[in-house]
Structure formats: C-alpha cells, structure tokens
Image (cartoon, rainbow, N blue to C red):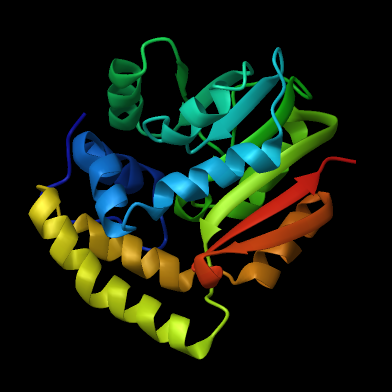
Length: 236
C-alpha cells in the first residue's frame, strides 16, 4: 500500500482510499496520540461503551471502524467474542500484532462482509465520522445485528455549555496539533481529525440519523460535558 506523504491528508469528503492511507500512516502511534490528546479520558470513554453494551459471555459483537482494537479488547474482557472490523489495512495489522488473540477483519462499514442478523450487538467508537457515508453504515449495522440487538455509538459531539464549547475548540485548534507533532510522525493528519470533529452532527443530529436508518429506543449520554456522546439504540 502507498502511504500518504506528510504534506497530504484526507479531506472531509472522506474518500475511502485517502482515509485508509492516512490512517495506515498514523496507525503505529494512533492509540498513543489519542491517549495524550484526550488526557487519558479515552480509556474512560471506551469503558463506558463496554458498560452500555452489557456484553454477555458467548455473544458475538461487531466493532466497526475498530482501528487497532482498543475498544474491542475492553468488550472482550466480558467473555463475548468480538470481531474488529476496519477499512484500514495498516490499523488492522497493528491491532493484530498487539492483540493476537483478537479477530480482525478488513472491511468497509458501508458494505459489511457479514450475513444478515449474525451479531448480537454492534458498536463503533470514534470511527463513524470517518466513514464516507455514515447513514449507509448505520443501515448496514442494522442489517447485520439480530432483531432486539443493541448498537452503541461513541463519538465526539457538541459540548453542552458555552465555556466547554470554547475550551474544546481551543483544544482542537491549538493543543491537538502540538501533541500530534510531538507524538506522531504525520501530525498533519490530525488537522483532518480536528475538522472532522467540528463538522460532525450534534447529539440530536446523530439521533435523527439513527432513527432514519431504522434504529429504535434511541438514547444518548453525554461524557466529559458533551465533548463525547454515547448513543444507544435497538434493532426492532
């Protein structure tokens, strides 16, 4: 695979080839940068996802846009079987190397390589906003989850207070580039990540997307003042 050059980044039209190349390039240090940029909060957010899913031993759970499998590992501790699926070969390779007992599959969230209704639940943490067609991905997730199954989406969102919105914007505009420059060899990629966060729908907007895709019983919970929101829904 041809990795992107440091002067390039994926654009907000989220061309799958550009997104895959960019994330392959940052894969080796992606989790480290996330941990530093979130001041360690990402671990708490991922733990909240596992809690919301309520995975049971023997269940089969799909983690889409799973990256290196950081969220998948937290879920698998319950005894459930987790299939980590990501578009990016580089992310999957790093994840498999770090977690050799975990199942990793290269796959497109808008055209999942799975049969209808085979998963008891599905989740995606900080990956849905990088999909070229998030609405189609939500429909695909509905297809592969059994009736009555659960979906949990954890994504950056809109802080609930004016002060938190201002602090979040300043952090994305100033601190994230500094952290990524120190910790990543492809810091320019993180300018895309900042822009993609700011362009993403707010809590209600994502709830509408879920409802339009056919999900029901939609609820959301704000984490860290709404910097992150976790949506939970059921396949009817």
